[in-house]
Amino acid sequence: MNEKIAQIEKKMLKDLEEVKDLKSLEKVRIAYLGKKSMLAELMKSIKDLSPEKKREYGPLVNALRASMQDKIAQKNDYFEDNFNALSEWIDVTAPGQRVTRGHLHPLTIVQRDIEKIFTTMGFVIADGPEIETEFFNFDAVNMPDNHPARDMQDTFWIHAEKNVRHVLRTHTSNVQVRYMQEHTPPFRMIVPGRVFRQEATDASHEHTFHQFETLVVGKSISVANFLHIAESFFSQFFHAEIKIRVRPSYFPFVEPGFEFDISCTNCEGSGCSTCQRTGWIEVGGAGMVHQNVFLAAGYEKNKYTGFAWGFGLERLAMMRYKIDDIRHFHGGDIRFATQF
Ligand code: FA5
Image (cartoon, rainbow, N blue to C red; front, side):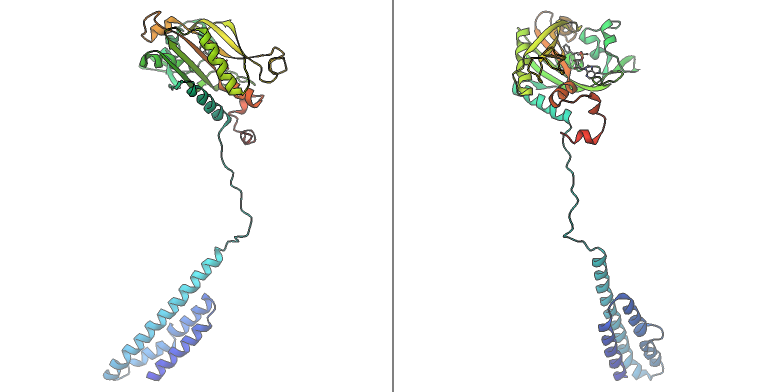
């Protein structure tokens, strides 16, 4: 019996050494541990032995079976590991796939540049809601109900809540009185932000665009302050010497009010197709803050003076990057976005 056990073990070890894959390993397993294997026969023969012999050989046969199971399992693990490594094989010499990096949208670049220039001039950046009450968007800035100037800002009205009518803000001027209510002059601040108008879009008009507002309030602020700040800002923004021209205009929240133009960044004022040969490009609206706006904020009448201006961020970005259609900004065309 001893000899038989040793023989089976020796043979199995030899067969195991020759195994090259999982398939031939399975054959060895069946041959040595299967129902019709030599080991199975050996185990069967034990029951015919005398009780002493059973006690002697039983544990030996069991140990042989355990050792065989162990060795086959080890070999099985080895093949499984190897097999997985082969199926997950990577050619480390193959050229990689280039991962394209994201970058800032041109409007974000322009907004950050504007903020940087103004903060170095001592301005703070203020913020306000895009869904605004009728009061802050219109009434507070001297545009009461039925004021004809409301018509110029085609408005998206939102259902009234608790009898308060709301709008998608039509301009960043909605932050003027909000800010004044919480701050005491003197102050200088800017409000960059998204605004909405119910417009039929064209190359220079969008329904969703960005403006930025500038508001400076103190005891003796004048148009001269406005001209100086505006010239400094535009010259820094365009890295060129920019001149400002103001023309009388009407906005209910300023008195006097004006439109302002900058000298053409393309031809430096000599006249070209960008400025329709005038040498000037219209940029935005401005003026001295109307005393009614100060009153709406709770300030005493004629205690302060100030200037405000507002203009379109997209229009500025179009000038800087020579973009011919405002609709590119939100068009989602990756060929446009990747140029910046
Ligand atoms: C206003 O919105 C005033 N709140 C600006 C202002 C502020 C005046 C403070 C005086 C004092 P206006 O409607 O003109 O004004 O718009 C200002 C700028 O926003 C325009 O000059 C233009 O650059 C831009 N803009 C207006 N409508 C559109 C539009 N549909 N698409 C893109 N840009 C626009």
